[in-house]
Image 1 (tube, protein in one colour):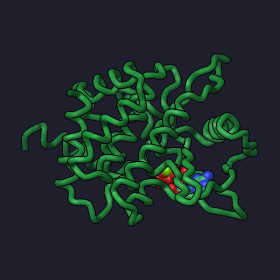
Image 2 (tube, protein in one colour):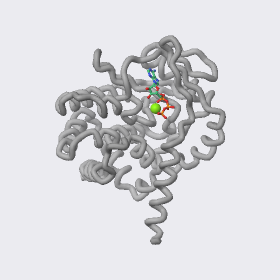
Image 3 (cartoon, helix red, strand yellow):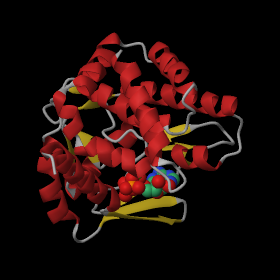
Length: 265
Ligand SMILES: Nc1ncnc2c1ncn2[C@@H]1O[C@H](COP(=O)(O)OP(=O)(O)OP(=O)(O)O)[C@@H](O)[C@H]1O
Ligand SMILES: [Mg+2]
């Protein structure tokens, strides 16, 4: 088997493993969401983080103490919420469902769905403007690290959007434009499969207009056109995670290739 095919196969296999494993247990208790690590999470994080560090925009899964500290900081910065310290995350339950689920299940018109996606772009922009204290005392702009449509909750009654799930974090010494570009990548690639092929160019054009930071777009272009992008196992895992059993792999691939070529054009 040619080397390229073998490496692609191995990458896909590794991505499937990352996708399939859920290192957290999440449950709801009296309007509070509780989340804790499974007992075997630590060795897995130890093995997985070096792989995630090899990305062009490195991310890492935070160990429990660091993760809770980070969530507390973010929740305080986002809505003033006081999350208790401890080894289990206990935070307010936000109304709504993951946007990816809503898009999959709702019978909303195409136009209505795109309007909702536009609100999500706004929510990402607002999130990226939040400043947070870095450990060395400096303030830095926030980035998500796993900004797919699975990690934004949408409440169709109020129209509100709320980002959740902060146990995976970009390396904070990476410039904000690169971290934000990586969030745009996750957001766009998880959105594409919910659009038809002809809708993708319009949505991208809208997004470029709405998220008008040329530095971020140029970082995204260089990330996607880099040789190393095809080795980005985390990107592959995010793509695989968003795919539902009803999606045709072939159509999905066409949409993602179209998106990639439009961004890099
Ligand atoms: N604050 C919240 N309010 C309401 N529901 C929440 C909240 N946090 C998490 N959930 C629900 O729990 C699910 C899993 O939460 P989260 O994404 O934080 O955990 P995870 O272990 O990282 O899961 P995954 O691996 O699927 O991303 C979310 O998809 C959402 O449905
Ligand atoms: Mg999640």
